[in-house]
Length: 92
Image 1 (cartoon, helix red, strand yellow):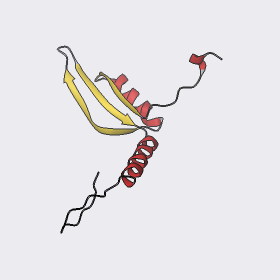
Image 2 (cartoon, rainbow, N blue to C red):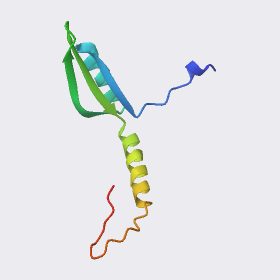
Image 3 (cartoon, rainbow, N blue to C red):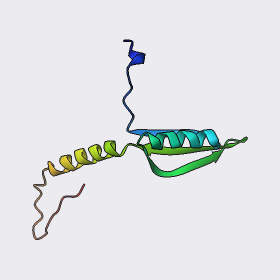
Image 4 (cartoon, rainbow, N blue to C red):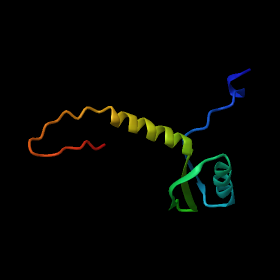
């Protein structure tokens, strides 16, 4: 089996761009049906001829995994700082 025949792992983050038309909306709709969710607001600009739009999409499971990794890293931080007379809490 050639490498191009192997199924590709979904990217955790995608930025979809293109002209503001039906095809762009179909691409966003397809990403949503694949399990992606919208991330942030869409952006739009004018290139002198037409409106170009962009929308970020993410896989929720990938975000949850990344959040868990950050939480674990924060939990492992060593906060051995001594501030006389002050309570100290570590924040990430």
